[in-house]
Length: 208
Image (cartoon, rainbow, N blue to C red; front, side, top):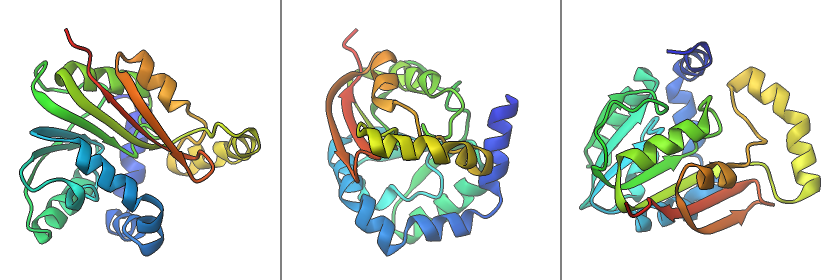
């Protein structure tokens, strides 16, 4: 494991329960709930959830999908597995590096990245791995916070970015749609909101 990735794991191992409470608050639901539902509407079949964390995406997935959740933090996954059970759902969770997935090629019907490309040290490598394990033409969806397309907002993000990277390994200035496009995903739509700070990028794996 690389030093940057080890640092990410250390940060998110500190208090996964507090993270879960914050990311399931009413404010967060107002901010992200609608798009999380859209993620759920996009996926089907065998779903790889990259950055599964504490399982916050689980309630939004259709009941008939099978979810495989991966994350670098065992403690986050412990909370996530328990949360899924509380929701009456099941998820197979695996401790894994998103940049080097220990999974076979072309097996998933859908791949979802949920608020994780902002912290993964090499987001393009992770997106390429998502493409590798996806079936040809599989749905690929990315719910992420990004560098805004609006210059005044982007300048503010650039100002706070050094502190956020230092404190939480959280990058506020990544051009994630470009990263996703370079990884081989065919981008079908980009939904921008909250002044462009958040993007929902919907695409599909290339037909091989």
